[in-house]
Structures are given as structure tokens and as C-alpha cells.
Length: 615
Image (cartoon, rainbow, N blue to C red):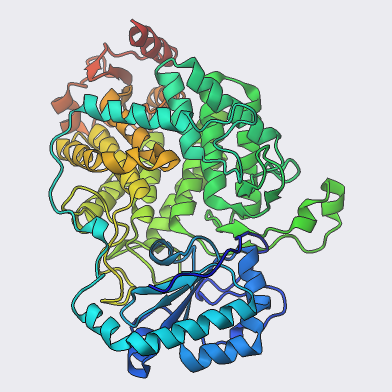
């Protein structure tokens, strides 16, 4: 491999609203980058490189990335660079958000990424942002190196060298791991994250500072469930600091992607859908667990941002991100009102991001008693399913060719399970089961982990560095979905698969730092048997509805709630012992697998959960 010659930082900002059907998205300011003969990531581009005896220049950009736009306006607009690329390379350009699987394989440490590949898709070298003269030098070096070594590189590719990442080569299933061992490993992950806590400004680490909502959720959840005041204080201090910092847009609500300074100041101003949905869920949980009104206020403001700015006009779906315009965001409310053109939106509708937004709205609907949010969230789930579900699971973004990615399956399944808990609609449960079954069949590797995509994923050229990769976060989220399906559907096989998956990821999570948080949270749900509330009653019955709403408001992390209809769920009610003799709606509170006597009083549910849980 040629050593990379690059020391330029990456940054973020000024995204571009663009056609959802195209990955060729350039800086919104004047540039000539479009004059390069960019190709799509497909078989034809790599076949052309092979026929022409040229390496591939892969450019990975992001719609919100400031330095990507600078590179378009300078480096890729330089006539010398345009000519050199045309003469010596086949140029392929992809969007990071639309092809997270390719970014995972080829990113060189930031955006923009410049990766030089063989026609077989193996990496020669790469860099992040480069000014014109430095890129010209690198283009010459790569061109000469490839011309000199082309035959041996082709031979290595034909022999299979580097065809599959080593991480996927493990084929031995994990040995059975006791729930207590998994819980101990999850506790170690939590301690490791706590060790990164910044006691001065909250959050994790120093700078740059990302909100890390999953890691803070772990500290919050463990603090509440285990009565650990130290972890709880870390989480709440971090939430207070985030809300008070410049990373929080106090004028138009929502949070920016990250701050460059330790005290949450000097943020990069892009606003991402998934970040804000996760932060809304985090603040909603903090409000539910502590009852502190400021957390409700922040959560409500983020929900307002999602529904008034990022929501698609006239549709229950959500755009992917909003422009980072540092000048606009430097104004106060009066100054912004005078700006005619607001920061642009990336109008791509990503399935995983919209599913996360639906989950946030469902949680807010319960805590704030807002049926409008419930209706929007349920409509979002229906729209995503009707427009985004196909032969290869959920697509990655509506109107695009990419499907079968793990993150879309896990987040959509989670949103459907949330919708089932909120309504008792068994269609949502059945759809979540379909996604889980597809993922188990197509994405579950022999070593027990889930891969980020299947070998048959659309828009992935066969044989071009397309071996599936095991990924921790999406795999942990899918394991959590499986645990929830086992609890809500009564199917032990899902719990067995969840156990196998969590055990397989134990080593990855231990070394992942804050990225291990989703795994630790999934282990907590699996190993600690959180409260499960079963309401027996018809979906249209007022008493059943009151009990369901009371169950959903129970302030216990990781609790689950379901409504069983005596007609539609008669077999489950009889099998699991939930029969109600009185004929009226009633609720069972089940703690660590043991169900208490039923109650028909919604006010009693919280008492039943709190009393025995503390004995």
C-alpha cells in the first residue's frame, strides 16, 4: 500500500439540497467539480477500470461536509486536477449518508475521503481533504505505482487476497454465555464509558465533543436501574451542559452535530435527523425518570424541531439533515427572521432516521399526552413500510436503489415494536417479526454477529470488495429487537438468537469504548428481565386503553408493555396464564418473569411496579 500523505483536518458545514435519486451532490457554491466524469458505484465503472488498465479514484462526500464543498470549489475545480483524473483514473463518487456501507469500508479518516482502488476494489492508498497541488502529486504517484504493479495486483485479486475482511472470517459460533457473565461484561463497558466522563463540562472526552446519546443513555439507564447515583449524576450533568451549551440551538431548537471545544462551544452547525431523534429520546427518558421539567422542555423543543423543520410538508416522514450555515446561526431570533433563505435541507428520506424520529414521537406522545404525535408516528411507520419494504428488507432511503442494510432493519423493527406497544396493533408486531426473520436469514453470520449488508444487496457490484462486514451497533440493536420480540411474542427462539448474538459481540463491545453502549443496553434488557406489563382487553375498550396508557407511563428503564385482545390473542392469553375471570379489562405486572395478581385500576400499576421491585 502506498503511504497516505495528508495531514489536513476535516470539518463540516453548508450542505446541499439535492435530487434524492442522485448521489452526485456538489457544493452549493460555484464550482467545476461536476466537470469530472464521475461514475456511479456499479459493475460498469470497475469493468471500465479493468479494461482501461486504470485505478479507481473513489470520492466519498457528505451533504453536510464543509471541507467536501471546499474540495469541490478548489481541488476538484482545478483544471489540472480535472485533466489528470480524466487521463489516469476512473472516477467514482458516492454520498456518505446514502452509502454508509461503502463509507465503512473505504473512509480514510474523515470527509471528504479520496480512496484509490484497484479494479477489484482493494485499497491502494487514500487521504482526506487535499489542496490541488497535493492531490496532483498523489495522483501522479498512484498512477505510476499502479502502472508498475498492475499485473501483480491483478494476480493477488484473482487469488482472493483481501477479498473478504478478516473480521468476517470467524466461523466458530460462540460458546454459551450465561446471562450473569453478559451482565458483568456490560457493567465493564459502562465503567469504561464512565471513565471518559468530563467532570468539568459534562459529556465524554475533551474536544472535539460529540453528544454521544447512546453512551449517555447507558449511564442514565444504569444509574436509574441500579440505583447508582454517581452514574445518574454524570448523565444528568451532561444533559444540563448540552442544553446550556452552544451546541444547542436555543432559538430554533434542535442540536448541532458536534462542538469543537470542550465546553460545548464553537459547534459545527449541521443538524442531523438521527442525532436529534436520539437526543429527544434521551431527554424524554431523563424527564420520565426524574420528573424534572427542564428535560421535558428540551425534549419538547427538539420534537418541535423535528415536526416543523425536518418533517416533510404534508407527509409523516423526515428529511435527513439541515444545512450548516454559520452566518445564519450567528444571528438571534430577530436577525434570523430577516434572512430570506433558510439553511437548506437534505431532502433524502432515510429509513433508519425516520424510524428513529417516529420512536421519539411515540415516546413524546405518551409522556406529553399528545395524540397528534401518536398519529404522526404511526403514519410514519406505515408510510415507511408501504414505500420502503421489499424483497431485500427495508430500503435505505426512499426512491433509492440501496436496500438490505442492517441499520434500516434494526431501527424499523424497533419503531414497529414501539408502535405495537403503544397501540396493541398486531400488524406492527407481525411486520417487526418479518424484518427480524429476514435479518436472521440474510445478515446473521456463522459466528453469531450480524453483518451490515447481505451479499445480494442492491447497488453493490459483485466481487468488488463487497463481502459483508460484522458491525457492533446495528447488531446490538437487532439483538435488542430479538429480546423484545421474545417478550412480546412469547417465542423463545428469538431470545436464544439474542443470547447467541450478544455473546458473539462481547469482545467487540469491550474494545469499542462509547460505541459499545448499545450492546450494553441490549444486555441489560436481556439479562435483567425488566418489568413487563400485559393489559388484557379489547383495543377499543376505554378501560383497556387507560391501563395501556398507564403502563406506557411507567418510569422504569427498558420496561415493555403490550395489549392482548381476548378475541385476537385468545391462544396467547390461555397459554401464558393471562385469563381474566371478571370479564373487564385488567393488567398484569410481571417482574423478573413472575406476574402479580391483575388489577383493573390504572393508578395501581405504578405502585405494583415500585413496591415489589424494591423488596
